[in-house]
Image 1 (cartoon, one colour):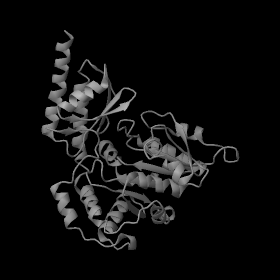
Image 2 (cartoon, rainbow, N blue to C red; image 1 turned 90 degrees about the vertical axis):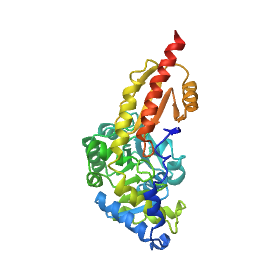
Image 3 (cartoon, one colour; image 1 turned 180 degrees about the vertical axis):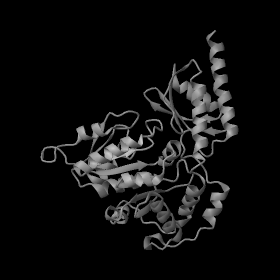
Image 4 (cartoon, helix red, strand yellow; image 1 turned 90 degrees about the horizontal axis):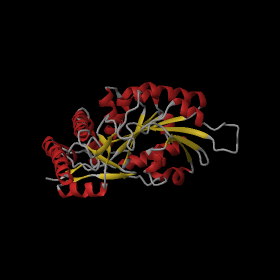
Length: 346
């Protein structure tokens, strides 16, 4: 049995999703004539109460487009030190937009309104970059799937309003937060100027993200997508997968969250586990005593694949293709691994 817990990006389209792909009505998206893409964009814009949405091949590209829409070269954005836009998008903030990042030491990838306010450069002090944008991430990837308290999001919105700053949400795993916190998309649409949401993580589509915003800021989004290389043709086949995903795979994220919590409970009983971070959604981050590479290799020999994150941290991610049968096998494997460790120590 192979169990892949490296990420929720490793899923394959289900039979029903493949049928939706094969039966998709398509056209040329460059001419805005692909009905499946248009339907996906309209559906997600409506879901969030926004005026416009645009389909992108990846979440990084959607985030990079948003940053370019909000900023001018030489300006600065504020983000947590764990932010995906800083750590995992190839330096695109500086390369694509000519913008620097002021990084905040938040909690599990989450920042507060007070921290944001303290990080804003005085607009009349021309020696420092002009602060123009705040980017937050919900859930946080490097922060272990942590979810913001919505009141904290509101407080940051007020700071942005007071200082005339843009407010962008990297919502790659926002679906997980909506389900875990029992929130709704329109709440988020009211708070943010732009939001990117991913279809290929917890929702299981083969690719795709959507950038959402009001018409004023989104008018140039298609031009920026073109600059970044994003002219697509009959991409409605992939949009159909995204439509199937948002219609069928959101509520089932509860299963991923429940299994993640159960894995955390077992890890907390094992003496060679030195720490398990709080588990809000589908990401489990933990540390072990001893050689982490040995642990990774031994689990891989048993068919379980996952990553080390550096600095002694390891990560499991539950997802659509991680079944209950795999889950029960994996929990038993963790317990038996501990038993073998105990025997070897005696």
